[in-house]
Amino acid sequence: MDLNKTDTVKTTIDTTHTNDVPVDHYTELENRCEKICSFSEEMINNNKLPELLQHHETKQTKPVAYDGFEPSGRIHIAQGIIRTINTNKLTDSGCEFIFWVADWFAKLNNKMGGDLKKIQTAGKLMIETWKLCGMNMENVKFLWASEEINTRANEYWSLVMDIASVNSLSRVQRCCKIMGRRDDDELNASQIFYPCMQCADIFFLNVDICSLGVDQRKVNMLAIEYCDKIKRKHKPVVLSHHMIIGLDGTKMSKSNPENAIFMDDAPSDIKRKIKKAYCPPKIVENNPILEYFKYIIFEHPDIKNNVTIQRKEEHGGNIMFSNYELLELSYVNEELYPGDIKNNLVGYINTLLFPIQKALTEDKEFKELTKRVKSYNN
Image 1: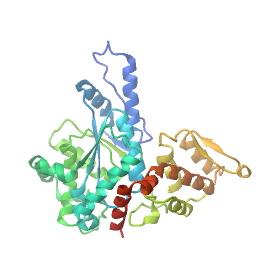
Image 2 (image 1 turned 90 degrees about the vertical axis):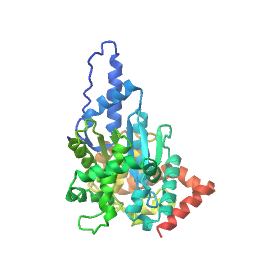
Image 3 (image 1 turned 180 degrees about the vertical axis):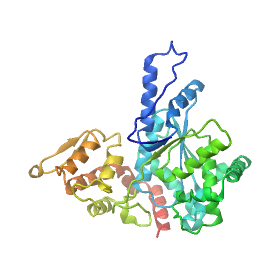
Image 4 (image 1 turned 60 degrees about the horizontal axis):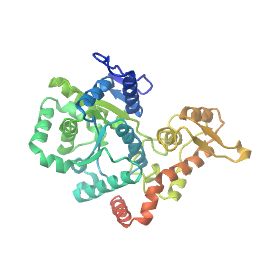
């Protein structure tokens, strides 16, 4: 069952044989479910989440959530800050989070010319960047696909072959958009195999919660269908987060560095990019500046519920917003103008990226790592 983010999160909690358990326990469980689901634009099997949390609580284990990343060069703000925010929500709610550093997948997808050494260097930069920008590492694991698959090769490739054998070629091809490919793209044989491998990752890692972008929904649905075909009772909960748009109001793409804020951008870069970003007065749809406020600024725990738009007194003075909806309403009603929100977004983004900017000045190893990966994109 698919649910939009606007739908109520269903948290049906089994209270059988629980006379001795405090009511507060169930309130806490509901709160955990809500927090885990709070960043999701689409949810599948989320009605099973309370049962899943209770099961792990009984076993004194942690539910496993995961996301997979192809290291492919510079890291934009959605990969850096939004992934950090969402990961912290999951680990704060008692989950273990696995980052599947998909180096082999990047090679299959011909990222950086298929050069595995470059891909793995880019993977190291991703990990170091997450550490710097506030990710709580206590319950986070980084697993390299190449290492884990080689270690348990028989288990992994048996899974991949079984998934491939129960699906038609056309069904697998429908998943190829997960690699950023169009329906009419001519694919290599390696890229045809890619969806079966990504589907296998979920079961290979024993994942309870798939926490990926909505652009990966096709392969997550392939995993749900696979469970039905093999009569597997335990299906993953799928929590798909929003994919933030580019600064020109269209799809974000790394191939256009002016269309996104990157984690290694200097303050001058951030100011320039935001100044020229698409932001028509009163318009919410496809407005990247409003999206940055909604999915980054108002979701960041150090800022949310207290977002201040600073303005000169002659322009109305400062105004504070406790939630995104109020800011959007003020923008639609022309109580706020593009210049107001753009100028203040620059300040907030620079604050969030300050640890990265500082490391680029003071940490020689991080600076060299960033420089090397940046050169791969040139």
